[in-house]
Amino acid sequence: MKNNTPKKIARQSAIKLGAISLITSIMVLIAIGSLDYWFYAIALGVVIEEISYFVIYRAIEDFINQRIKILYKTISKIKGSADPVINMDEDVIGKVNQDVMDWASEQIEEITILRETDSFRKDFIGNLAHELKTPLFNIQGFVMTLIEGGADDPEIRDKFLKKAEKNIDRMTGLLEDLDSIYKIESGRMSIDLHPTNIIDLCSDIIDSLQKKAEKSNVTLSISDKEPFTVLCDVNKIEQVVSNLLVNSINYGKDGGQSRVKFFDMGDKVLIEVSDDGIGIKKKDLMRIYERFYRVDKSRSRNAGGSGLGLAIVKHIIEAHGQNIHVRSTYGKGTTFSFTLQKISTEVDNLTLS
Ligand SMILES: Nc1ncnc2c1ncn2[C@@H]1O[C@H](COP(=O)(O)OP(=O)(O)OP(=O)(O)O)[C@@H](O)[C@H]1O
Ligand SMILES: [Mg+2]
Image 1 (cartoon, helix red, strand yellow):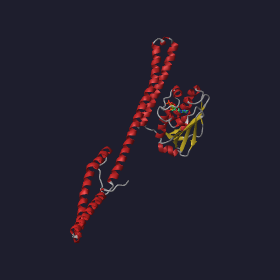
Image 2 (cartoon, protein in one colour):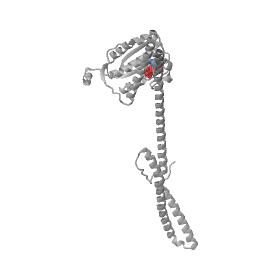
Image 3 (spheres, protein in one colour):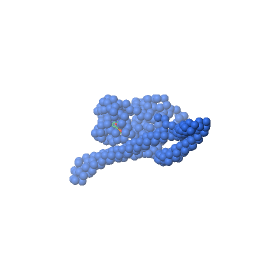
């Protein structure tokens, strides 16, 4: 609802007082039989109207200075803005109402963000403690068994030392992932772009994962098209492809297939890593890039996963200014695809080097 401006309020009140004075004066003149002096009544009415306007205007201005300016100063102290300027020709009450409402909703937004950050931090610390506790307790158990006599039997000793080593690897992997996340999120990750043959890079990764794939009875393959040279940070993209392939093995099916394919998209190359494994339900699909998020916790933990892999993958792809996309059918399989900038001519290579 629109309110009157302070000036209008003062003027309307003054006119009313002037009119009352005029009517009273005319009635007095009629009573004493001197209606000929009617113009004095008008003059008095006008004078009273003007004086009233001046007095009322000043009173409103004082009120505004004392109350509303203090209110504005309180808001602006928090907002960090300058001294308020109040225009007496404006709807001051309406404006102050709107500004206070805006300020309040801003405060609510800030409080909500703070709460979210706080719960995010608590979740992160909770998840981290949990992830570190599991392998650490395992190691503690194996070492205790060895101390309590297990070390005397060479077979038990070797078995428990191997198990301890596996858990140490898991902790090391987790700490390395955390280090990557920390570097990425604090803006300390530098992307070192170089022309790279992406097909050769993916072939090498597949070779290094062959043993792991055989253990899970998954076949890894690559579509061998003409070589694509892309602009990327080799180590980081190796981390991406390797994370996606390890996932395709860990969440693949016995006797399943994992493929890497390349598609020419003009100035970009689309790289696809697909499997015919367990797939991901729609409700989980939108959360898989969250840190520590795992769909099937027991399966993922058996695979040694802590739920950081895809968070790192997404960060790396975005740091390259590119996108990653996932599509999946539960029970049928999953395909991750991401793009990289292509460099096709020797001129590009020369410009870069
Ligand atoms: N190819 C896939 N098929 C089915 N589920 C998948 C696939 N890739 C990822 N997921 C699901 O998404 C979750 C998150 O994956 P992510 O790689 O981030 O973590 P992780 O594999 O559990 O652990 P790590 O940090 O060791 O990679 C997995 O736990 C798994 O449930
Ligand atoms: Mg993973």
